[in-house]
Amino acid sequence: MTTPNTSNSTTAHRHWDEVWKTGGGRADWSTVAPWVAETLGLLRERKVRDVLDLACGVGRHAVFFARSGFTCWAVDASDTAIEQSRAAAEAAGVPVDLRIGPMSHLPYPDDHFDYVLAYNAIYHGDRDAARSHVREIHRVLRTGGLYQLTMLSRRNHEHGKGIEVGPGAFVQPDATDDKVHPHFYCDAAELIAMNEPAELLQAYDQEHSAPGSFHWHCLFELPGEAGGPE
Image (cartoon, rainbow, N blue to C red; front, top):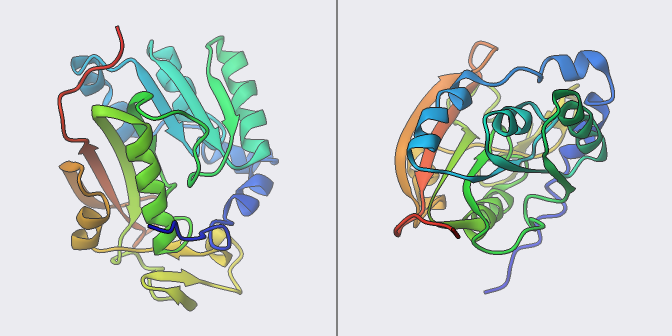
């Protein structure tokens, strides 16, 4: 099967690269999301060791995982994100393996992680891009591994605004934020379908900070018996 060329739609990191250069821009994304923190007990119960923070931004979750005792990797397509994440890890005194790379071609071997976090990440692009991001998560996860992601919901107040550039994907040319780049929105049925064969363990549609900013919050498990190298 031919892999779709998603490079023309996965451009939002250009916006975020500029955001991460300012103290004000970083401040809004410096606190660990409560939903992520709440998963810590499950990860310890499952004896998770190796974790990946996908599209890590300025490193808030990567540093959190490293501080919590996990072996942590983090990747982002933004040079500035990696620079800021490195500074955050050094300030916290914790090791994080930081790399620059796209979500569609992660710089890791197959079956490398027990858990992947993709918080406000994989919907940047069109539908083909989102699907390619999920396939990469599946590739780098070990059998029985967990992954936690957010996805833009079709209940989100931005859905349908601007120009439709593909099924469920929109660009707002006059926007002043990252909506000038493609964003993909999905309903529950497509959310489940695009993550197959992973099993859905948890899902709910929740507003973020702004009224109407609905995002799916999901926890998935790859089929098979969990277990990594000893």
